[in-house]
Length: 45
View 1 (tube, rainbow, N blue to C red):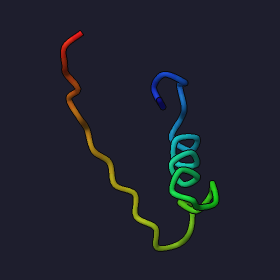
View 2 (tube, rainbow, N blue to C red; view 1 turned 30 degrees about the horizontal axis):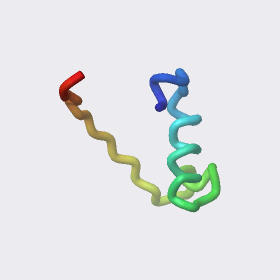
View 3 (tube, helix red, strand yellow; view 1 turned 180 degrees about the vertical axis):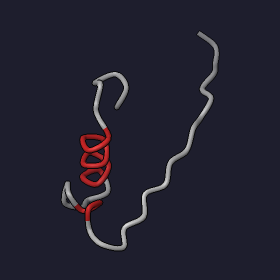
View 4 (tube, one colour; view 1 turned 135 degrees about the vertical axis):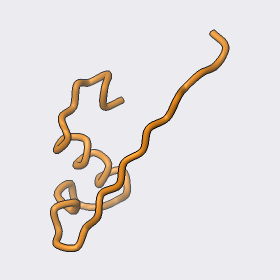
């Protein structure tokens, strides 16, 4: 979704926080750690 809507890092983190039921700026709180991952998506089309 983030790439489809061309979200920047802050928009992505805000949306992720909201999806988790947190305030959009919860990721800015001291002590918060942000991790990333990469996935290869494949399947039949």
